Amino acid sequence: MSDVRVHGTVESGFEAVREEFATVVANEARDGGAQLAVHHHGRLVVDLWGGDGVDGDSLLGLYSSSKGAMALVAALLVQEGALDLDREVSSWWPEFAAEGKGRLTLRQLLAHRSGVIGVDGGFRLDELADDRVVAARLAGQRPFWEPGTAHGYHALVIGALVGEVVLRATGRTIRETFEERVRAPYALDYYLGLPEELEPRFRTALPMLPTPAEQALLAENPIAPDSLMAIAFNLHADPPFDGCAYANSRTVRALAPLSGGGIGSARGLSRMYAAIAGELDGHAPLLKPDTLAEVARIHSSGTDLVTGEKNAFGLGFVPLATRYPALTRAAVGHSGAPGSQAFADPATGLAYSYTRRRFAFGGGPGAAENDRLIPAVAAAVGSQS
Image (tube, rainbow, N blue to C red; front, side):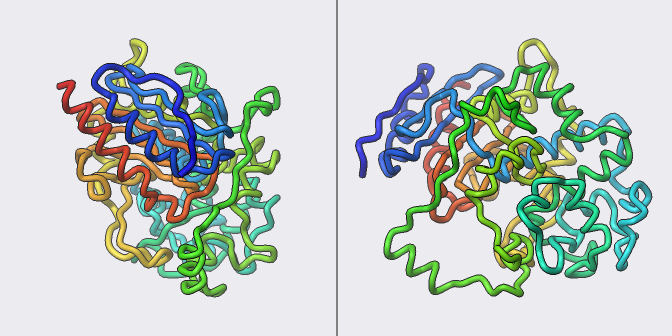
């Protein structure tokens, strides 16, 4: 353990959350660091950070936690009637009908059921940075399973696919709609396209530091280059996908691919989910109860063809109650590769974001830190009722 100090504040009743966060960051290398922010009924009740590598205002790569912004904008457009979940993707985007994909619906796409998880030969980093380039290549790609019949995590491409539908349907990008209707009105410290003047606040992503035992486990379970996992995570490309290089690319930060290119602080991401969880700054919740119920409803479950694990997807968002029993069935959010997690639980008015600079072993949805932090947060929220 290191002697990493914890900074920031918690409201009365959330002291146990600070203690759990201190335990989490004690296991961090000093140059790493993490942030934790929690809103309850629109109020920032936890605002913590630790590690020499970050402070409360640091901006970090959010990786797949970025998918929450994509899912939110899609839900808003469905709510308003600008998108129809049961309409075929190809009705907006005719090129997508190639290779037997013509009957796939937007609902199936948002539930990771398209089968188009990557492309033969993979993408270059500069291609992955540009969702329009990714979408153009995916349009002609043969699916890796029959569309609509099964699910598999569309790790690096779901944002490009949904983003292209939104652009074709509305004439505006998800990034534009997010900026005008979510980020700017709520003053979120969370960006789809990091302004150059904010670059000094960005902290580069750092690689995993596995223990010898963890290194041995990784060596015992290599990812086959022709597997669906390799294709979905672009590991079959030459060179293969490098997670740190992705967020550390100024091009990625500027263009903000929707699957993983968001940049922000834990405060900013938690605040976005606070606008979903309930009223915020006098504004009504962004999503109406029936919309929330539909995006939280499980649309895909069982064994994921990409990861080989059992999981579940709603519409763009991930339902979290099964993974975290302390949450309600209304809880939706998305994890990120380094170990980040962010969500809203509208039933309790809770919004949560944990972000970290260094990749953790077993990151993404399996990050152990959130198994400690989320129950502590939920218990504190319960004590406020």
